[in-house]
Image (cartoon, rainbow, N blue to C red; front, side, top):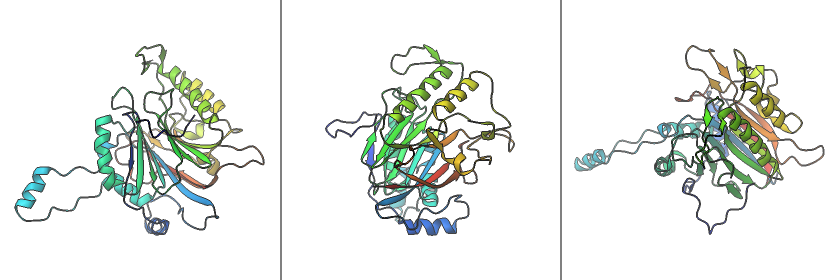
Amino acid sequence: MGRKRDRSITPPSSLKHVKLETSPKTKAEAAAKAADDPVTDVVTHSGDVPEGWMRLKIISWNCDGLMKYVAKPRKPLDAFFDRHRGRESPPEEPSFLRNFIDTHQPDILFLQETHMNKEDWQKVQKRLFRDAPGYCAEVCLPMSGRRLAGVLSLWRESLPVTSTGETVTWDGEGRVHMLELPNVWLVNCYALNSSENLYRDPWSGEQKMRRSERKREFQRQLRQHLDGFGKAWILAGDLNIARTQLDSYPGLRVSRPHDLNRQEFNELFDDDSTRDFIRELYPTEKKFTWHGYGEPMLDQARVDMILGSKSSSGTFAGYELLGGDTMEKVDRGESDHSPMYCIIETCY
């Protein structure tokens, strides 16, 4: 369960917090840009908001490696010769990440599969001053130090984030990061994919189970953790599972262990306890977030999701869902995943 951060304790080296200084753009500017840009694939999240509430746009994206999307440092030798010749250095081209943030204006951006180690993260921290001005950033990396998995959370520094979960005790692969707002927890997650290969425990190094078994164990631990919050939650990320036939093209993988993974996931996150935002908004439409390489429509699936807790009848939900969608038309760089977003209102 998330807890208040003890400022007297130094965070683990695999997780750092950066507060960036430049003020964020206003929501009026964001609305104007979204109205002028036909490829944002999102609705505006500005407008009248009830007193005591805030409206948030949350974008989640498996970027499949972050380093290629951030600003590249200028070579010192080039800068030296520019000064020596008495000319100004050419302006830097905005990075892919900067263009993405400027175009889509997320209040919160969850990235999965960052593929960074601690040294990479130290470089990215410096570049985020240019790429994500006005945002705070935290990362959760694999304890092994390998460039696998990893999640990064970015949020506007003006948001009333009351605490962050540095990681969870049951994962050592850099798969979960959490933000707490006054009435809702937000969870950035990259779940395991499934195979019959042996899974290596990140703490002991032992291989006691197959990856498909660890995937189901991870799903159970995740659900138990969400239930332990004691208040509303929203889970966003690459959950590496297609729930129904509607979520996969040309069809679901029905062989074992995929059928067991799906059955257990759907039982853990059933309609009685969980809201599937995209499916709630588009109950009969095909919506995909993963796209196989090759010819169009070769293989596609909705394996990335935004899920939310469902309140009991007559109780406060902690948030209101206003909209959302997959973002299949936007530039996704070199990733085989499309982003997705939701717009919520929550009180503070």
